[in-house]
Length: 150
Ligand SMILES: O=c1ccn([C@H]2C[C@H](O)[C@@H](COP(=O)(O)OP(=O)(O)OP(=O)(O)O)O2)c(=O)[nH]1
Ligand SMILES: [Mg+2]
Image (cartoon, rainbow, N blue to C red; front, side, top):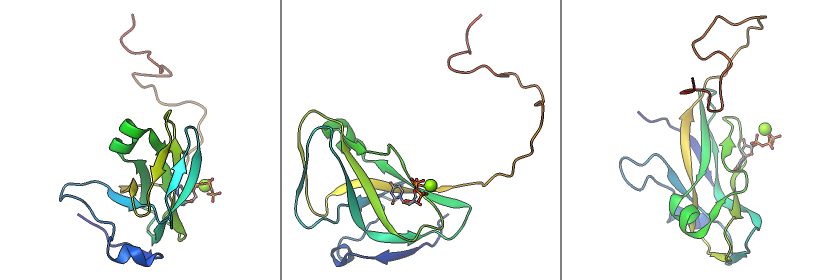
């Protein structure tokens, strides 16, 4: 199943390198760094990178997540300054990627390099029913490693 989402190309370079699913089974499509010249990210540094595109999901049952690419994160320490980016269904601005060099060495980010990935996910908005007590559950209030203990 797929959904049709309006997308604006804000950087003409993307017309020849349009974001797409790399394989038929890919969950994410790679986002590119729409920068003019290489940027050196020093260890510990975070910078906001434009992706050259905007989407308008326009459906409260969906959102998009920006996630790190595993290769960049594991090998080079390039992850997201906000850990995960959440794109609201009513957001119409440029998709931005907060790039954080959590590693120990400088990393050179080149124009149009694939820096993160975008995943469309289903979402439910909740209404809340305020109660004094919950119906009993097996877990109750146990958490943070509570299971498997006697
Ligand atoms: O990595 C990200 C995260 C967010 N956004 C955009 C889309 C999102 O819909 C909007 C707001 O994000 P969020 O709600 O996470 O940020 P906030 O700090 O709560 O800002 P706001 O007050 O605008 O909601 O910023 C991005 O482009 N990239
Ligand atoms: Mg917000």
